[in-house]
Amino acid sequence: MRAIRTTVIASATVLMGLPISTGAAQVRVTTSTGDVSIYTEKNLVDRLIVVDSVELEMAELAAKRTQNTAVRDYANMLISDHRGHLESLRKIASEDDVGRQASASDTAGAVAIRSLTSLAQMSADSGFDKAFIREQIRLHNQEIIALKMFGGAAKDDDLKDEVKRTMPVLERHLARAREVAAQIGVPIDSAGTTPQPTTTSKPPR
Image 1 (cartoon, rainbow, N blue to C red):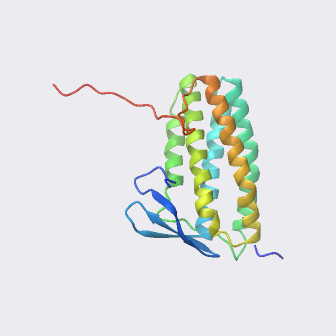
Image 2 (cartoon, one colour):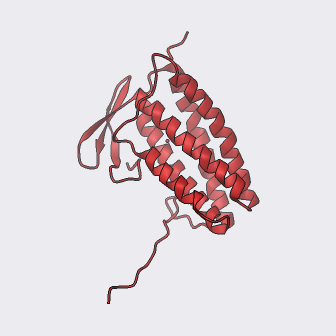
Image 3 (cartoon, rainbow, N blue to C red):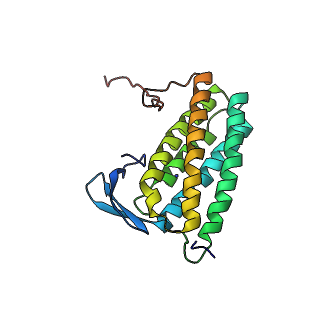
């Protein structure tokens, strides 16, 4: 038998910069406070499963709620791709020599859950569609960067293959999200991301 989700995380404890060294079973990154964080193969598997699971729920929610054909088609594509990816990841995680373990410094899953909760509370209108597509662009940009940074932690052959297969899928999802964004009026900046909506408040009297 073969051996068996720079700024990466949008949260207060963001992992930044490039890996300062890599090994067969882990990568070391520098945090925003200058601390060194070790990211292992188990951490990588856990992140991929958690973010993919939340992404699948987002897509299922959008497929049911949206009234826009382009958004629904995009959501259905995500459902199909993420279900297959999750099945493969869970099989890999079940192997005794792989497994999964959450990283205390990786809050990508928590951020994604907050986004899902926010979407679930929105009405089924164009505002929901725009918020969903905006989140897909943010999330896929984040996960492409994360996979480039943390993918080196994979030592298992099956996991390495899965990481290699995942990158073009993420890139395809991101490209399609940008196309849908243009169709429904979601602005995209020169970096290929969507500016976050801002709110204004009246100054105190």
